[in-house]
Amino acid sequence: MRFENPFKRVERLKQVTNIPQKSQGERVPPGQFLTVRFPVLHYGETPHYATLDEWTFRVFGLVEEEKLFTWADMMALPTNQQTVDIHCVTRWSKLDTTWTGIPWRQFLQLIKVNAEATHVMAHCENDFTTNIALDVLDDDDTMLAYRYEGEPLEADHGYPMRLLVPKKYFWKSAKWIRGLEFMAADRPGFWERHGYHMEGDPWREERFGW
Image (cartoon, rainbow, N blue to C red; front, side, top):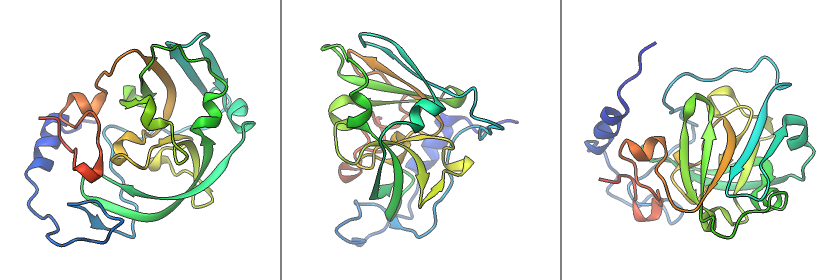
């Protein structure tokens, strides 16, 4: 199967002219449309799992000890449920979405991060990556999510687990996450290398890096 060149996809998004001229409400960042649907947008094929018996989650980089978690390990950790608004760089926003998962701050208690670490690279299936600052992740609404609206994530929305960082454009909430690399400096992930912004703040409309 052939996929559109990611550079071309970003350039097409830059040329979109159907942009809302009026505010969609105080909870909606500029340039966004409200939707009640949950659009499916990603690059490459959707991974499918017959079983999670061999699934693992790797933590590496600037940590005192590299760790490898099984699915059973992850499911044994404390969980939380939260309702947040999400905003996609392709200009849709969806309000009051409810997720269940492992709170970031809870997960971080299992890891001894070296003092020089400032950023994380999320590593996912299909070699997808995205970069996020540690101070951005350090928030009450950030989690490793595995349920949406009370049900396991659908395959197209990141089953079995995705990162959830609702304060950033939704590509930062990386689907099909398989690991976290702690880094001493920022480094572009997949979409950042192809033209998306390194930070991705929807309230500042940080859509593109150039």
